[in-house]
Length: 235
Ligand code: MN
Image (cartoon, rainbow, N blue to C red; front, side, top):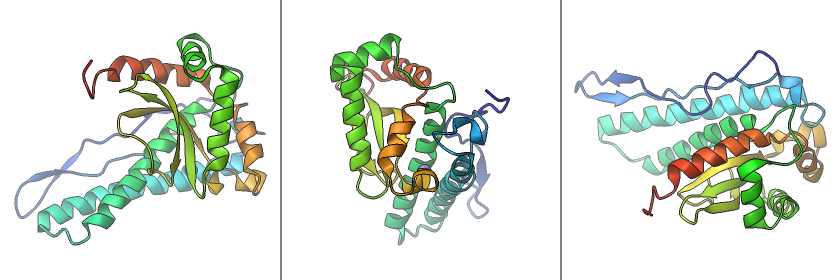
């Protein structure tokens, strides 16, 4: 582990600005790019340093900037009371904030010391819900390989059903249920693997199991279960 630790793990906001004409304070987009919790090349040979540098510094950065821009433009629309472009702005926010959130989780889901299998509560929950870790891996791998175009596969805590589910989703935001909390995400956009694996996504997905950070996933699982059970529908 290098000394470069993630200073922020997720989305953060907080600053405000005052609109000149009205004096109304509006939130300003202040999402920030988190640092990688390891060096660019730390995940080699599973993922090259070149990919990690581009993926983090360019792609993730673009989602952060896009989310901030979307918030600023929505604030401007409110100020002008002009919502002619609302559909595009809402889509831009969902796409870019989704991208920022997904990548912020994804980096921490990987580790040079990763691989193997989960233990503790997470291992028990995976066995209970999927039957076995191998059955989970089989479904997850199929979901990741099956993504048509750009998207992700993820292990989620379903706070309503109070169980684990795998969801396959598209772009950064399409096709997952409200109330599900991402625990482990795998980016299967071509930008995540093409430089290393060309079009052979299957080899990338196979290699990803060698760097899966199950202790991070386990912490996310225990936190999600503790904090969200009963939150949405009562219990
Ligand atoms: Mn990506």
